[in-house]
Image 1 (cartoon, one colour):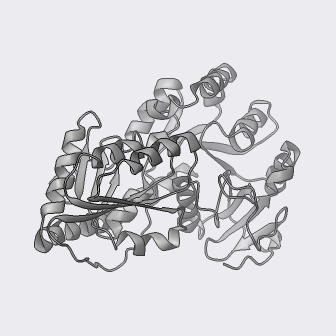
Image 2 (image 1 turned 120 degrees about the horizontal axis):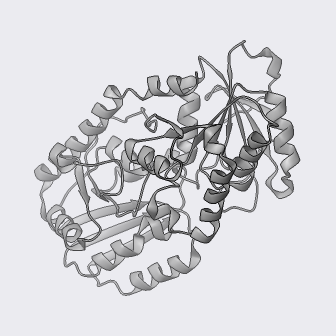
Image 3 (image 1 turned 135 degrees about the horizontal axis):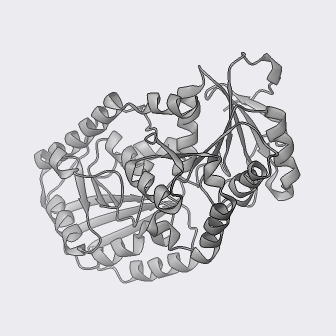
Length: 391
């Protein structure tokens, strides 16, 4: 990707949106939030001047991106956005103030609720009347019970602080679905909340099946290795099965202690179960990888959208997920299964049934998944929702 230096004054005279996010492309290890912000740029670039303020280092990494200049505005032709990569090792609040003031955006878009530099600090600046422009804040699932239960000792004091500040009266919340709208209103009653669904990847590959042999099943899990993604639940489930099953795990290790528990579970697998860990992979490699497998599995404890889930559906692969995501009633549309985590035996039954199925049966599920994603792309009203957010 080429990032020629931009002279900001040459941008067309359109309203400006400044997106603040801890990680952005070419990063990929933070998962969905990066893709969501990328998609916002793509759909709004013709009608707004888009600016992104971020850091020069991927999530969980110590070394900055290679061949990316930091502390200067760059232009990404593909996204139609000016990007400023702050040097993470020397990051100071004053730099954020300086660049926000420099852009002087009509809209400032914040991701998540608990990022010290990219959410908490800008909201404090708003509270103290040091920033103008309309603030739009997207919690990205941070207010779900499953998310708040993790490191609650850090998160709940910040929620109390926000309410004390009355910051919710000065901003607009962006909820990505009705479930998130309910969560926002629970913690910030009386706040302005606008719903705009997460923007999906609309670049769907042609349908391609893969060979399916009865009694064998190739599964793939794509997510960060953290408790909320529930990999250990899946591994313990597989230990009980008799079919020939291969599980491929893709994603960065964020919680080392949790990963050690997972590795102990992997070491106890019977001979009929094979587990391969590939580490983190860039988004550009995921489609081809998914298409080599029969089933995408993610027994997550909570997803705001689940970009990897939708990526699997785009590729024409059925998904086996929990009922804690926006992707519900999948079985009725022959696109997969969304099951309660309180019923692990149901997860096991689906895996066994899919392992036993033949090529014809598998292709029925596979084509159903591809069609489900295609229908979602072509019938979404999401773009209009985003224009409503920024007006």
